[in-house]
Image (tube, rainbow, N blue to C red):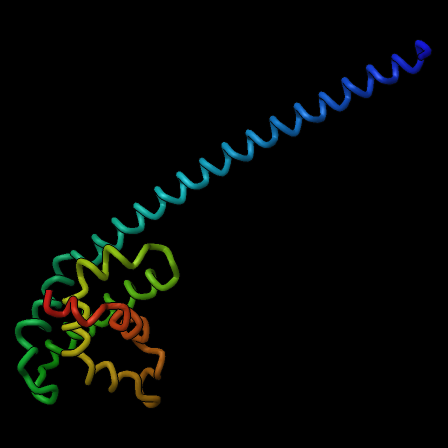
Length: 162
């Protein structure tokens, strides 16, 4: 082998080694970025869960759910007062927003279906006549509070007794 060929071989070995080292460094950087992204996504999910929990636990929202679950459970829809209808609208709107946030994947459904499942089911069943009235085309249309309906469908019937 001539000196030129040896030099070429050494340069190629050094070049390939540098390339492999560069690829390894990039690989490590990608893994680190992926781990950071996963950690950021988990933190964002936890923040979203906390925000939705706080939204559902707001005093006026809890009071509205109590009106629906206690006062309206055995009251005919036609006998609801204007104030009771406002409370029903608050419950429907709140659970509609929760359903949308869950359906879009900003928070996992588990914590909400598990913890609020009986309330979601009961509130929807009590408010169904009002929801159906609001979904008439001459009122707000069929997509109004449809995420509340979707959320209701996510609750297993067995949790209604829980």
